[in-house]
Length: 218
Image 1 (cartoon, rainbow, N blue to C red):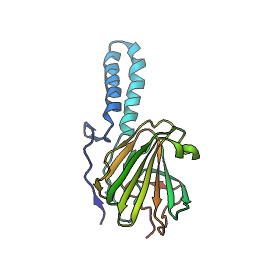
Image 2 (cartoon, one colour):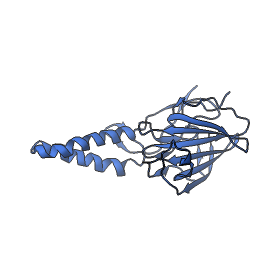
Image 3 (cartoon, rainbow, N blue to C red):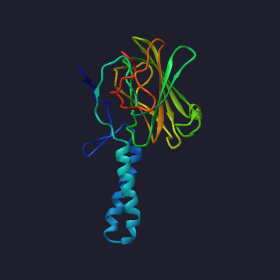
Image 4 (cartoon, helix red, strand yellow):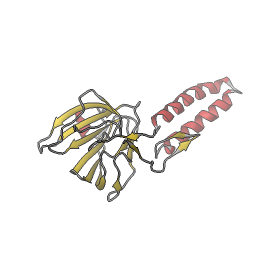
């Protein structure tokens, strides 16, 4: 049966579930919108501030949403909402599944398997668009999980406008499949390396849902 996971502590606003790490970006935007709306009632000139600020605040709320999910069954599940950009056999026998996340997707990433986080490595880099092949040299965080099927590598890659990756859990932490493990702000990519012998169950162009889409073929 599908199961759900309780989330790690996170930000919230009026009952809206928001991703951890949203407040530094969201609160100033909401404050600006609120001030603009109040002053626009007294002066039409403030409408020039209120309208775009309110639109930006609404966009921020949408971007930082963090819905609950019923976690699917499977050895490896998708860690990200998005579209499968490529599926590539690797020289060491693994298969890389690259998932492109647009700014419209939920940007909270989830653990693809249960296990222990053995490495969380931040690597500085550029900010070319995440759909570009050269995005492999972008700012990124490389994860390794010790799982029942061996070491599984996952990489969070920043995009052209993503300027920070926020890991939620440290090295040595045990995670359950589908647990929230991090956030990438404003468009990005997530790569998962399936161990040798595990065939991907997704196809290029397929839409994925974090915690719900199964990556491995039964």
